[in-house]
Length: 320
Image (cartoon, rainbow, N blue to C red; front, side, top):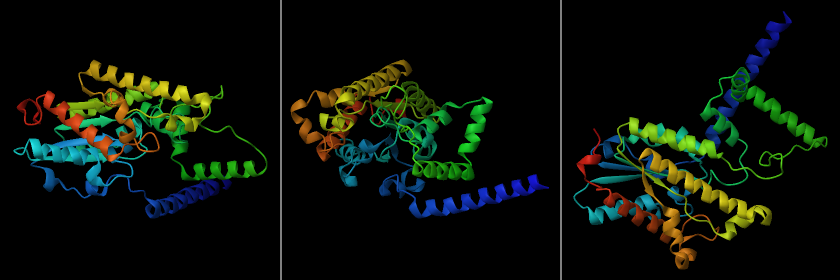
């Protein structure tokens, strides 16, 4: 008799916490996409030449008005140079997102628009040292773990009761003097990137597959823009060079994946690095995000990449 009662109590606790957490999330739901993007309807764009820009805060346009983001500038440039083309450029950038998170929202934020062209720009968050607590879980979910322990772990991670009990227990233990190792530090004391090299490559390749299966025939990969010492210095002198080297490695991964899968490459890192004298005006004071001038350079480079491939307007790239 005791076991059914215990199971019933657990079920009531799980359901109650789910309802409570859902209500809390609704009150604190973050605004991810730009308001201008969320306001778009299918009827508005169905007859247009649709370009979707998927990415992180560089695409979103951190601390910039919508008109100064590279998707908005690209739309203006298209109107100026290709007035006969009725195009819409959709900003699907979300601040702080990795390629794993971009893959998770591919259906909602890219494929729903049935794009003719897609620009993909990730890497700055993927390669950033010091992962967020949920990043390893997201990557494991993307990879899939068919083992019994993997299935049990996935089940527990979806249980609001388990997650709440674990969080409260850790909080109590910390008050009693227990000190756990921060999740962003590995066994050798060094910080780990938010997404592993293997996970980064897998997410990129799966995005290519999903977009091509949807009928889009023109995909452009963008390498990550450079960062300055101001940004790298946040990790301290011990890990500064490792961070810069890691970004170079992730950019090389993007180049290799694009070449292997026949995807167009827009090498923003090299474009920006070739303008050393202009970098202070292209990068924001935090050393990683772009100024309005930096966003304009991305838009101009994107237009040149489109035109060099016979876009826009080429029948070769029209959706079937």
